[in-house]
Image (cartoon, helix red, strand yellow):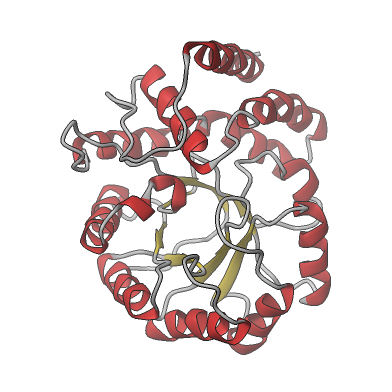
Length: 302
């Protein structure tokens, strides 16, 4: 597959499930078609796609289907992070074969690996394929923050096309500045806070953002405003967008709010998550989501 550009709004897909907890591929195709219509620049499979609740075979199948549904129109970034290098490499090779344009991996989280072991883990993945690897620091949800020196070592070794980053450790803006300085501006970075940090990170230099799938129409407009230098419009969109994202306080909360809004918009038939889950929406929170969603919708339409 021809290499497609890794830049812009790369939406992290939500995985729909049937009542028996199998993946609902009919709804998944509907989601992909809708997102392309909204103007997103790429698909991503990652933590809010509930990949940690899928088997390795399901992850391969999910990636293959998303590559099929993208039909070469936009790039697909496949999640390959695992608790062992062997499984990560297996996922990476399958994703490349099925047509993914790039991979994304978190560090293992179940064991306290040394820095050398983590470096070796990422090196093993990178060297197993010919497509880029985006290294995700998901420590706002799981694991520990990755050291900035790790990023720089991998850029020095493989170059900034082969290895890119989605750093989510806080404080986001300060750490992005440190990464840019340490890498002499070479690091290619995706914002990873659902768009909530774009006003602060875009001026420093990010190539794109990786938000959830629930409000692509808002993220595309925000990104376009930033690209055009329309700061006033970007701020206008950002405020209600950030207020909505603030309700997604944990990984399970993120997924719950995302799926609730996908059902609300008629994209999903069900907000089902695979259990066990650590967060459920009550009616009070649903009302708050609806109110914040409506304010964002009004700003986009206005």
